Image 1 (cartoon, rainbow, N blue to C red):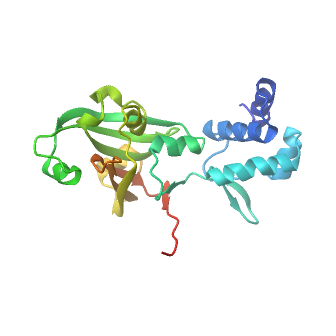
Image 2 (image 1 turned 30 degrees about the horizontal axis):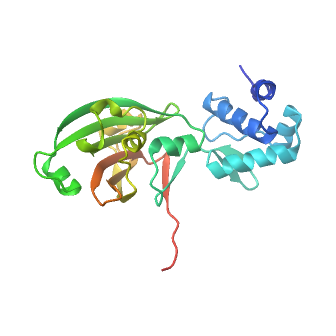
Image 3 (image 1 turned 30 degrees about the vertical axis):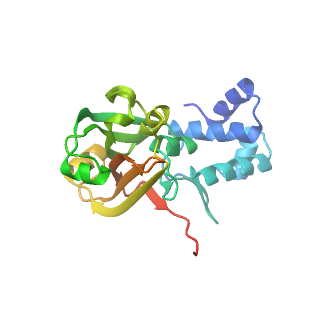
Length: 246
């Protein structure tokens, strides 16, 4: 089995990045390849420094960055642990793919459905469209690396994209390429218990805790362009928001 020291040695030979950044890359690769499992503790910083023949200051700087990203969690008195939970800033309008990449995770999708049609009464009300208006629908399971995080049901106003197949990995990247990426959104978060079908898609158990997030995205001119409902695993996702006084 490949070790962290071997991963680090390969990176040192092929990259001129600072050592702390190489260690961050090596730790991400080790975590993604399951060299360290979910919730497992990393070796102590002094052990990592000795094994990799680098300073403890370098190890601390690398780990500080991964803690800030959310990939690791520091537990005082216990050590540094792999963080399987994802924190999503509820106040920032970013895509799932952007969130995962910013944490060193690889986003991917398993498509359940891509279709075009006309708005349902609920969609027409939410998107402020006339009956019969054309829309694209995208239903998929969103993964971080190989872990299913949510099931996403998105409806996009058809005029916002050049074609149904324009969406590949990231819907927001496709909308941005078409000049129609949302600049603000209304989001609603609610708790639920996963149904049998939702649990099957998310590799969870029926009745497990889940989170439902509805998002209505708007363009700069005020037009609604996206209505999305996502079902998240409650054991994998935390939504956070920064609050301030008026």
